[in-house]
Image 1 (cartoon, rainbow, N blue to C red):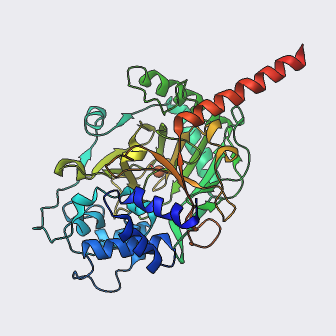
Image 2: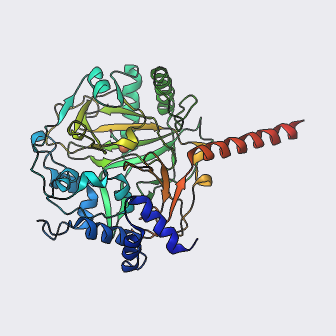
Image 3: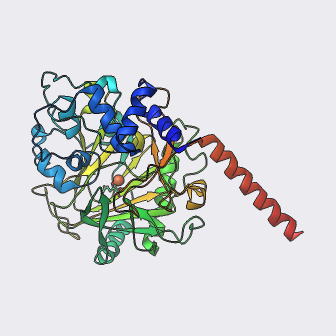
Length: 439
Ligand SMILES: O=C(O)CCC(=O)C(=O)O
Ligand SMILES: [Fe+2]
C-alpha cells in the first residue's frame, strides 16, 4: 500500500462518512500532512471558521482543553472555587463560540461524533454547577470510581506521608512538548517502580510525552502500602464486570507515579492517564496524603446533558480513589488550583502527596510497542468517536517526544485479542524452553 493510500485510510477511519475524493483533496492541499489535512477537511465541510473568536485563540490554546496545562486552563475557566462559572473549552466550542478547529489526530479521535458538533450556533445552555461529592456512596453512584476513607492503618499513612514529603524535595516539574512550545506543569512528580515486582520495568519512562529521569525504587513504606492497596482493590473488584481487554488476573500494581502539590495553587490539568504501558482499560489506585484537595472528573463523551457535568471529589488524607475501567477511556480528571485550602494538615501543612499505583503490563512494554519513523515508541490511544471504530485502540506517533512537537503521522490499529494471544504464546514458549533446559 502506498504512503498516500495509507494516509487516506487513516483519514477515512477518522471521518467515516466523508467521501474519499474530498479527503484526497484535503490531503493533497495539505501536502501530505495529516493534521493539516484533517483541519482542511473540517474547515471545508463544517464551515466553522467564520465564528467570533479572537485570533489569539490559537490551535495551541484549543489543544489545552484536552491536555494538562493547568495555568492556561485556569485562565480560561476561572477559579476552581467558582463552580457556577465553570465552562470548559469543549463546551464553548460546541456552542459555537470558538471555531471547531481540530489540532491533532488525538483531538479528532477524542471528540464527540461529528453530528453532535455541527457548528451552527446553538442557544447558550446554562452551565451546570460543579457537583461536589464527599461520600463514598455518592462517588459510586455518579462515577466509575470507588472512594475509600482511612484506607491504610493510621501510622502507616503518616509515616508514608513523611518519607514522601522528604522524597518530594528532589522531584521535578514535568515538561513536555505541545506543538512548538515546552509546557511545564505546576506541581512536581516522580516515577517509581516496585523492586518486589519489577519484572516488567526497570528503566527510562516516557511520561506525559517526555522522557523522565530513570525510575526510582519503591521505598519500604511504599511497598507495604502497595500490597495493602493491591489487596483492597482486588477485594472490591470481585463483584464487578470484567471486560475482555482488561487485566484478567489479580491486579498487581508494579509502578507508581508520585505527585506533590506544595500549595493550593499547584495542580494538574485535565487529562486521562496514558495507556501505552498500562494497556486498555487500566485500574488505577490513587492514594491521597496530606492536605485535602478537590479531584475533578468529567466525561469525555457527552451523549446527554447529564454527562457533561464536572464532578469534584474531596480527597482527604489517607483516602484511596480507585479509578475502575473505563475511567481512563471515558473520563478526564484534574486537580485544579484552589484559592484557599479548607484547613492545613498537621504533618504536611499545605502540601498534598498523591501516589497513583498502576500495573504496567508485560504485553504492553516497549518490546510490544511499535516505533514510528521518529524511532521512539508510539502512544496508545482509544477511539472515542461513535461509529464502527468506537472502542478500538490504535498507536500513533507521540508528537513531542523526540521531534519537538512534530507528529510524523504514524498510525496503526491495535488488535487487542491478537496481542493477548501473541503474548500468551510467547510466554508459554519461554516457559517450555526453561523447562527443557532444567530437564
Ligand atoms: O493528584 C491526583 O490526585 C491525580 C494525579 C494524576 O492524575 C496522575 O498522576 O496522573
Ligand atoms: Fe492522572
